[in-house]
Length: 413
Image (cartoon, rainbow, N blue to C red; front, side):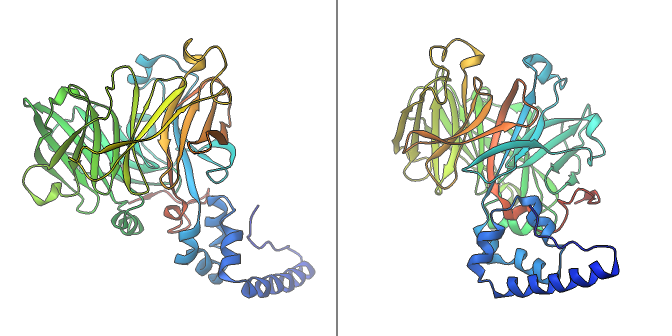
């Protein structure tokens, strides 16, 4: 479906098309903002972006802030196709892929691949991390990093850091105002955090890149826990990175937004509400509050919300659900990969989680209050795929220009 105008090559058809276009424009002009928003918000994000090219009037309509605020969230995933060899994945032999839903989150449909062929260094790079629709790639054996946006087909080359990283993380929050404004200017509003490997007892050296300053800042960080215990889910929100840690089971908050202002990297620690041994833990923000999700990999899922800010210790159990046979294959929920259920994301606005069902080979939206599946997406190529990360981001972040068009020029930010 597209709202673009089409014209015939013949003179008579041109006349009829011009008349029809004039009538269509008159109809469009008579629609209220609410009606226009309801029509356009039901289109895939690519069709909305293409519609900006129809005319100045269409461009103004699609670019209007009122419409942008009403656009649905875009569901995106990173996944590994047809590969069970974790060692091969770690060596970069199994290349991760990026896909977006062809319909708004909360419904269902297909997850379709985004072609990364526009990025000229794809064959010599490996994916180091991904966050909220952006990919962090590193040229193998070098300090050259790139941030790639598969939807808008933009990419940015970062200046090399001063030290070799042991671990690299990408932090991008599309909901923050600074990210939105920076993104319109080509910067993207993101951070890259490199752990240099120079550990101390309960801290270490961190090098942080900011897309706003286009520079790296070398800082010391006192994690409050042994550096080796930092593992598990990594989550970024409002300028801070949240990392799960063990020994003790806790969440560490690192304020990377202030990393360029000098001094140490500010950190805070809060114990988790429950022992995390043997569970798959995730951190996420929903309705502006930090949530902790713990799953046994099969049927049981618990969700806590933090009432307050770290280091406050006021975790409140919000949901405890047991998945039914609509999510997990009956009788085989604990019998290996076929029955695995992997909780990947929490909806940023409502009580819903997104899980990858290895049995159904689908990404499912599960309503925690109603305790039922409310959406399902399959990967276009089918087969045994393994989704590893999922995000829901504002569609409006992809509408700053017409770069989502298939024939868009590659642009280095």
